[in-house]
Length: 232
Ligand SMILES: [Zn+2]
Ligand SMILES: [Zn+2]
Image (cartoon, rainbow, N blue to C red; front, side, top):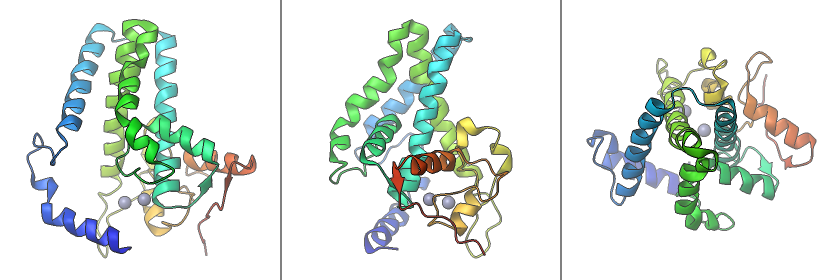
C-alpha cells in the first residue's frame, strides 16, 4: 500500500462515513445526493409512464448500459485502479467518457474529465430526449439507476464471504448470467487472490466480458502490458 493510500484509508476510518445517516452527504457532496434523488424520482416516473419501452429505446438503453459497465470494469478498475493493462490512449479516453465522472481523475492526462464532469452527467441524463420522452426516461434515469444499483449489488455481494484472515471476498457464480451487471467483476475472490491480473475469470467457464474485451484489444494492438494471473 502506498503512503497516500494508507493515509486516505486512515482518514476514512476516522470519519466513519458508514455511520452517518444516509441522507447526510459528506462535506461538499450535496450535489451528488441531489443527483441521486433526482434520478430515482425520474426513473420511477419513467417506469410508471412507459413500463414497456420500444425496441429502439430498449436497445439504446442496453448499449449505453454496456458501454458504461465495460468502461467501469476495463478502464476504471482494471486499467486505472490496478494498472493491470495499458490501453491505447484513445480507447482509454473513450471508455472514461462512457463511464461518466470520477473525482480522482485530477492528474494529467485525465484532468480534462474533472472539468467535464458536470456537462457529461447532464448529457448522460438528457441525451435520451433525442428519442422522445420514452428515451429521456429510459436512456437517462432508468439506465443510471439500474447501473448504480447493480454496481453496488455486485460490490456488496462479492464481499459477503466468511472472512478468513480479514478477507471476505467471494466469487458469485450466479451473477455470471446477469452479465449486464457484473462484466466479470463477480469473480471477486479471484480478483483478491490475483489483484495484479487483468483477467478475473480464471477458467473458461467463468464468463468475464471485461477480459474478452481486453484480450480483443490486445490482439488488435490497442492494449499492451496485459498482466495475466500467475497460476500454479
Ligand atoms: Zn480491485
Ligand atoms: Zn474487494
